[in-house]
Length: 91
Picture 1 (spheres, rainbow, N blue to C red):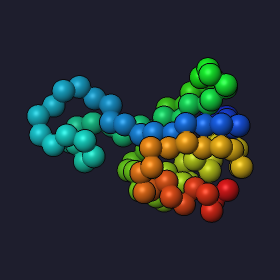
Picture 2: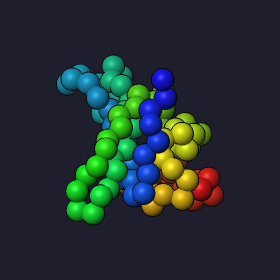
Picture 3: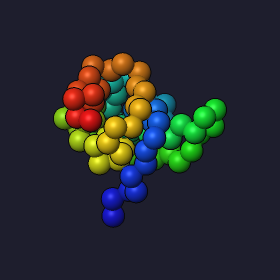
């Protein structure tokens, strides 16, 4: 079942979830799960939050996931990762 669409103002980021492991840190870390975090902004408060496992942080993955999760024409704030650069043209 697809998650309910959330909207208005959203803050997006992605992170790796998993315990301490030896090896590469950050993007490409082995043995960890990549998760997209979408938090609804309601004034100075946080509204609903969605956590979604994603296969990678490519523009195709992030934009299609956000299109399915966030209402069109919402105000979306990201950390500036280049994969998010197509969000404006996607609506």
